Length: 102
Image (tube, rainbow, N blue to C red):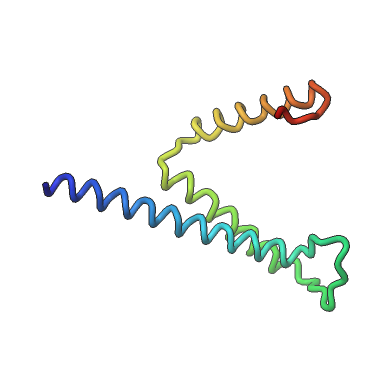
């Protein structure tokens, strides 16, 4: 029973931690988007010219994103392999006229 409970607790902690990391990453990216004024159709009342603040925001977003890989124990090779699979899918899609398959 004790081992089963420990396994359940570990899973719950891992899921909770992953949710926390995803939330942090989402907030970090929201701050980056807000700072970069990405909506070309919108007129902003204030333009923030402080690009150094953007560096910190991007740094936080990248660190939060990479923590996800650490949390699920992905190695550098795993990340590279996943990237290459996705890259090859993109190249193949572009070879067929840039259309997504349905």
